[in-house]
Image (tube, rainbow, N blue to C red; front, side, top):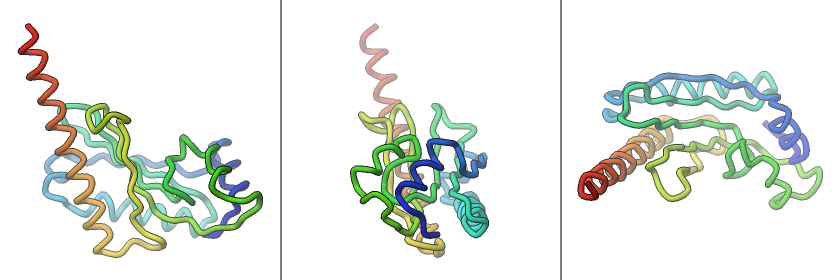
Length: 158
């Protein structure tokens, strides 16, 4: 979907986009089962064909700590929360194509508690879906390792 930077920023700031949530089990995440990312991509494709920007949150329901993944139709590798910053990367009125980005949010992922990856310039292919799931699994495993280190440090401090 083509959109101007100004329209993109305005739509995000006014919550004029579709939001959906999918729940995924830790087992499906670790097995890199593609159903959740494919369903999210299908939803975004439908929303874009309806002329709407889209965000699908994939929530891991049974992990040891909160971790969420967001598949978003975006114009740059910034989460929707930072839409106001797009003015630094595009000219006023500049039209651009939306792309698919995968964001991970978790307190234990890294210092910023956030990571974003470019997944696709258009419809997601099977290879891109597999790559997205591998990223999700990797970010979960990194977060789990950091979570466990935190627990160990707290035990040693006692």
